[in-house]
Picture 1 (tube, rainbow, N blue to C red):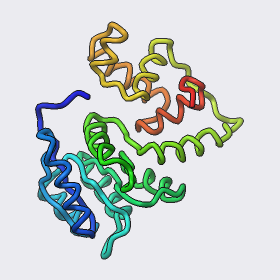
Picture 2 (picture 1 turned 30 degrees about the vertical axis):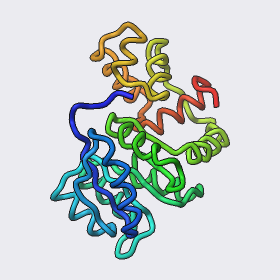
Picture 3 (picture 1 turned 45 degrees about the horizontal axis):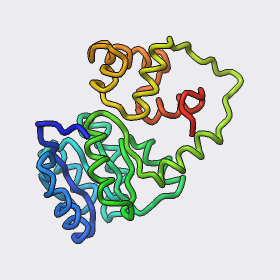
Picture 4 (picture 1 turned 60 degrees about the horizontal axis):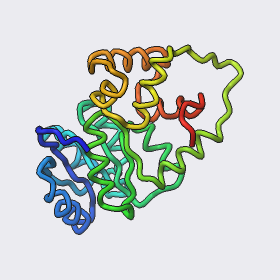
Length: 219
């Protein structure tokens, strides 16, 4: 795992003080993470996000006053530089659909290993998405169960673009992709933008979905 010299500023949002305390204690072991605040509901989270401007928000779903889904939607619209990771006990398909409609970049179950929280924070900070393995399983079932509409026309990616896409979906960093393909990081970023423009896809989840449908990634 590559660590950034810059501290990742995190806001924790949960209506259970013990949950917040547990997460803070765990993250305190990692110098690259700085917990800058906490909130007990979605409305308070929005206000704190405006003033504190964290890099990442760990957001529960079920909270009083305003739930995490509504708060995530508002933050994603009005504070687009802040990424939200949902941290919850809910793992059913409907919640997962709603979460991505709200613009969350990650989904970690509270009963998952605590290390998943760290992985999620670092992955999302790098610009990637992160899902607990249990959530990924549900997502893949949804994706592989879909059928392509007859009217869909697949845009054509070059062989190099497909190679970059595969590595992006596998969550390799720009530098790692550049090293593997003997390219410059700037060229990798150009390929990444070309891929997104061609596919009209601008999220890591969307790219993963496309790669699975095309058979570029075997699940």
